[in-house]
Length: 296
Length: 325
Image (cartoon, rainbow over all chains, first blue to last red):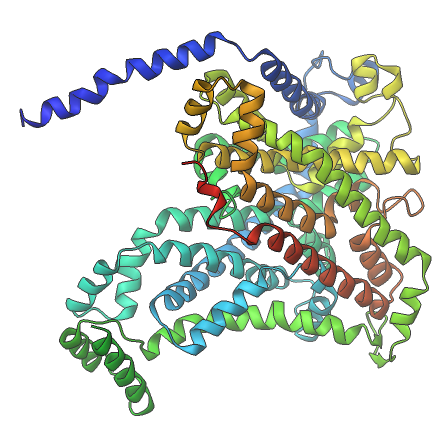
């Protein structure tokens, strides 16, 4: 124990030096960068600030006050009105579609990624090539045949219609990211599982799954956000008001209440709230989920 | 070892021909040979992902090509139309305008987004506390959906009750969404506002991976901040720039949600890019065959641009990034 102490103490004794160097660097303040940074902050924050404060204004306040002034008589009426307009149901629809698409997409992709990394036959290799090429298929361009298929399957105007294509289009990137992570698992661990007599199925659940958990969280968030914010599939594949998901509900709400801007902006705030909460409690995971696989 | 491995693969193959799944035999042989073998059950694991991907992504891709040679109004029966849709598309000024707009939006959003996200990424990669705080706020637009952003900007751009009145800047009080040129400008601005935070994140990650020693060596050599940025940061970020540009440019081919909500393609056809043209032709004018032609063009355009960009950066992938270390 005592012999290791000097080794651990040495770096701590050295740390002041780089820190003081950083201090010297700080003293030469980078004024242009700082100024530009604050200007950019204004560009980002003013619209968000406007959305927030306007959503608490009464309609009279909206027409009479300075648009950027805080509401003189803050009110929750807009939020009450939005909630009275079935937003609870739309929220539930969004949750169902997001979970219904993300959980199977990640589970199937994880199984596929495990097989692709562990096996090496021609079938698995060509499946992997197919998934890689699938990265380049844009959802928008396939929407007409998807529409046709969903009609033929008698799924038009159902939440399942949104789930199935969402799963399919989440698979390529998810397989790519997860297989990169599973490839990083040391081969010795797989070997020792084999020596203990575990089947591939058991190896997958007991070894690969726990070791790739961070990547699974990341891809789940990435896919979940994509589905949560998705607009085109619900626009084309559903029709009934009671099946609206949040982005679509937002759009039809602003069409319906275009004169009541504070209420429309309250609906914007409400639909963003769940993701804002996620950002506050798990910023690191959310941020890594947003750039899943791109920032490496 | 290699012989044993080869033997393992061979036995696995034979076994699959005979009795497909005998886990006991499998593990016993593995124990004897100590090598990785391919097993039948692994193939089954890929099946769920493969089936749903084939049915709902690959099949529609083939379907859109087939549909481009048909007439379909979205409800009735589908009839074969030969190359009529394709001929009409190539003689249609709306189509060319949509194609031109797609390129214009692609080019302008790339020119605006790339330098700003590159600088912001470098800025937020710094270790100063205030920069970390700013970064938290910079990423807020990422939380909003495209529909939400479009709706918010519609309110914000109102000449009487929006930003112009709030900031007391009369020149901001324009009919932003009513004038063709201005509407296009709005689309480009809002796209940038929405996606710069995302690309800033990518660049921030890239900058953080640049070895500190490079900067220390440069500052010993007397290089200032600007020189360090242009001679170290930018060259080191070559692959990050290619990744980010690919995402920007390929994304621009299919911009739909935000433009659809904020302008609906108007005024006139001023913001009707290819994706909107496809939607409006197919689902508003009920010409699915004609819209499928646009969809095929979308796919080809996106693919060829992505491949071209990847080739730009792909030549000496291993060499240059570690240069000078």
